View 1 (cartoon, rainbow, N blue to C red):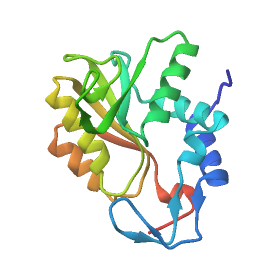
View 2: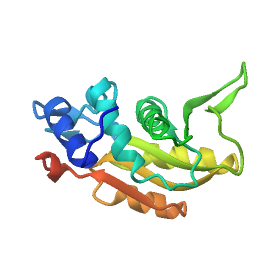
View 3: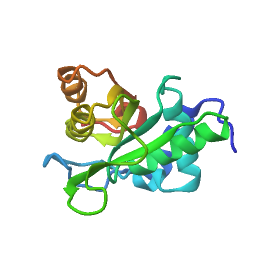
Amino acid sequence: MKNFSDPKSALIEHLKAHAVRTDGPFVLRSGETSDWYIDARQTTFSGEGALRVGAAVLQHVPDDVVAVGGMTMGADPIAVSTAIVAASSGRDLASFSIRKEAKDHGTGGRLVGPVSAGDLVVVVEDTTTTGSAVAEATTVLLDAGVHVVLGVALVDRSGGKATDRMAELGVPYTALITPDELGVRD
């Protein structure tokens, strides 16, 4: 597996080359309109990009954390790539997903994956404008008795909103990359 001497720079490079779109306007999940967009799935769903994502996120996952995950779809490839990169270095780290709605069949509920009450986890997200997805995932986990030790976004364009939302939940939050580092501004 590739070893990136500077995982954050490697991730920024891939996002700039494959995910930054400046041919807007774009309507964001928040409902806001922007002239630029981060199509992070162009990186997170790419084999090479996934390795960069996993390496960059893993640097922020404390040793006592047993799993990473968040709201499906944005968090899924991030969580899986982080777990794979961890496994390649001998660390056992699981991934999980939070469904948008509870299912009434199978095991039901919103939390999917090998995570139980009392576990220490990190919540991840690809891009955030308001912090709503990372906060929603955190709330679902806290309600299930899972201990969220950190929220992480690959790209944060929230201007501090995500940090504030997570602080209200009592969970630290970090963004790996800002729009300025990608050469775009709101």
